[in-house]
Length: 163
Image 1 (cartoon, rainbow, N blue to C red):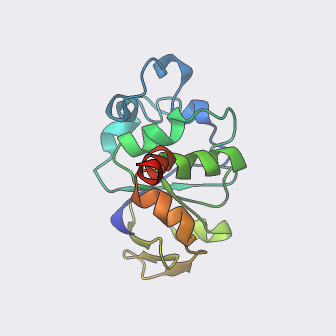
Image 2 (cartoon, rainbow, N blue to C red):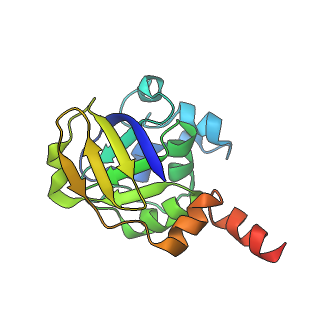
Image 3 (tube, rainbow, N blue to C red):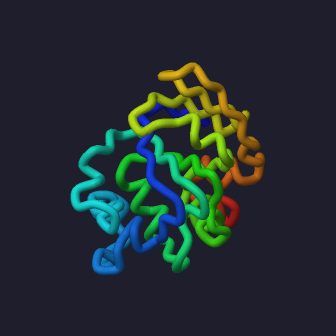
């Protein structure tokens, strides 16, 4: 699981309502939710995203309600992975369940600036900042979680097991 894209950095304590405000929860369509991703922070934020870009969050990313729409909106906007200082626990599990790659890197988020080009290898936990040359290490995604991600999330994983 390797990803290369431009970093889009957000701050600490970004809650699920900032990721996808409640007024947009009239659908579960990833593309439609993706168009409104981060409307709780800035109108039109998602228009800056190119497919494959990487979200970089601060401390306690994804706090707030346990809505599954938040990771779906991130995926729908074109970002396959989120790197953060730390994640709210419920968001962390929901993210993997929805098929979103999540890596915690603590204070090393300071080695990434908005707009840096990143190369992320979730299987090894290595993040290369292609702009600065920095290499950041995270714990790799565990094999059983990688299996869920490879199927596009928990629902598809379970469907495959029972089929």
